[in-house]
Structures are given as C-alpha cells and as structure tokens.
Length: 402
Image (cartoon, rainbow, N blue to C red; front, side, top):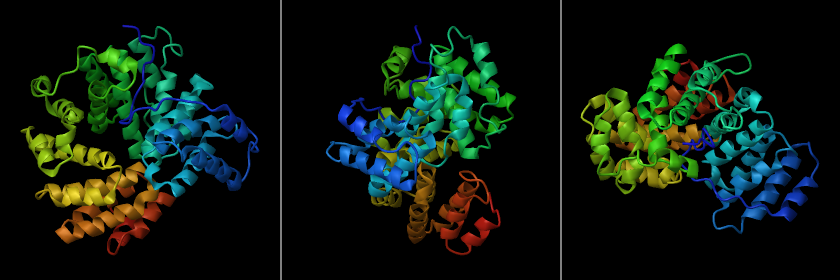
C-alpha cells in the first residue's frame, strides 16, 4: 500500500476542515512582525473575534493560529494560544493546534525536526506539539523509500535527553506513544511487528518502563483512524465491537491490555457511565491489567466530558471503591497533563475527593505528577506545590515522590 503520510494522526480529536479567508489573513499581516505581549494579545483578539461566529470556535482556533507562523515564531504562537485560553476556557484541550503548529514549523526544514521537538513547550495543548513534528518529518516525500532499518537509526534515542532537550517524563512518554503510531505506518499496520519495534527501541534506550505506552500508540492507530490514509492503512484489519475480545486474546500481558484499552471507542457510550466502565475493565481478568484499564479510561472520560469538572466529579462519585478514589486521582492529574495552568482545578478535584475519603490518594497522585509533568524546582512544579494544602505542600517541595 502506498504510504502518503507516515504519521497522519496521533490524537483523539478530528482535524477540522481548513478554510482560509483572505481578508482576515491580510489584516493579521498588518500587525508588526515581532513585539510585546500587546502585539500577541492583538493577534488573539482578532482570532477570538473571527471565530466567535463559528458553530465550534475551538476548530476555528485550530485553523487560524497556525496562519500566524511566519509573522511570529512557534513559541509566540503558543503565547497567543494562552491569551485565547484566558478568554475561552473551553480551549485547554488544544491538542490539534499543538500538532498543527509543529507540523508547519517542521515543514520549513524537515531535517531539523528534532530541534522542533526540543522547542515544543510542555504542559500545554496536551503535548500535541511533539506529535506534529513526527508527522511532518516522516512524510514519504521527506524520507523517500526509507527502510525500517534506516528509520530505526534516525529514531534511536529521539525520546531521551540529549543536548538541547531535557524532556520531562511526560514528554518522554508522549514521544514513545508517537513512536507506536509511527511503527504501524512503517510496518503497513502489522501490529506484531509494530509492538516488537516498540520493545526494541525502548530497550535500546533503557526505557522499558515506557514500552507499554508505545504499545498504546500502535493499537490506537487501529481503533482511532482519522485521516483517509489511516482508514486505508487499517482496512480489513480492525475488529468490530463483537470481535474485539477474541482479537485481543491473541496477545499477552501489556499488549493485550493496550489492545483492549485502545478499543474503547467501540464502547464509547458504555465507558462514559460509571456502571459501564466497571463492566468494560472487568472483562480483563488480570488485576494489573484491570488497574491499567481503569487508569486509561479515567483519562479518556475527562476529555469526553470536555474537562467539565462538575461532570467529572459526578462520574467519579458514583463509582464503587477502590475505583472511586482512582477516578478522582486520575481526573486531577489529567487536568494538569492537559494544561499546566489547570493546577488549581486539580487541587479542587482532590478537595472534593476528600468528601469520599479519597483525598489522600488524589493528593498523592498530584505529588507524583509534580515531578512527572514538571522538572523539580521549575515554575510549574512550584506552582503546583504551592496550591496544595498542608501537609501536601511541604511533601511536594521536599521532593516527595512515590
């Protein structure tokens, strides 16, 4: 099969159709190319005005902000996004935009794709920026007739610390997840070869603890095709809802768990109800796979609820123990994983969880993410630690991590 794009989709939301309105684009170019925050705020104000009449403004933002590249840097475009988020707090899950910005930036010089990865800001737009750089670099026209062996050489160590890039653990996990998607294109959707590639690359890097994240990316490619190339890639290879149990039984361990978890779109209505998610995860017999299933679903559900705190709290509170506590903890960490500015929302989630005796587990989850999402001592780390109640602030600042 012809691979026109090696990494077409690495996220849960559909790319919106692109439509350019020339008069708006020209008006933006009249703004000075570089400048203060006032200039960036002006860009944001114009985009907010432009998109206010759209039926779904976030899709409009996804289209309009990348048009600014060339007038401003990629980093400044993310600052514009911050200003938009201040006015429209329904736009924190802007994964598509992060993807689009780095795709356009990488297209300027595909050979510099690793530099774009290193420049991607963390903890904004659910880390979509890293994914876009992968996509653009591995378009067929960028690396024609490349063998798997040649690709493996270029990918070696790409998700690990190197000069110019000191990734957080979250950024490393995001990167390995992207490699799982890429493996499916490299092997023409051969899931066995793709998961084997995950094992090989993570083993070479000494990061076997993230192999299962790469598995997730490979299986996600089967169950969440987005672009025409994705659908063509998996044609005849994706199981139906009825076939999913037997399909996943051919795998073992974490591979089986990733297969089942990433099949959640076939059970969308079920997993977004407390009773349904318990039934879905209970299908897996191994306790460690059940736990991982709940962890995965409690990350899926908040985005399906558009990060609505009220809906998340209601969903978690109706679950039985111990899933209730895990739900609150995962929902709290999902908020800061999506955007670092949501730390106050995460703390509120844990405060609410305390009403159900789940406060300690929730706060401990945030302590773990204080050094998973952020570098210890960074601005994001200090902000998260400071917003927690005592004794959690003290534990956080002292480097507590379990």
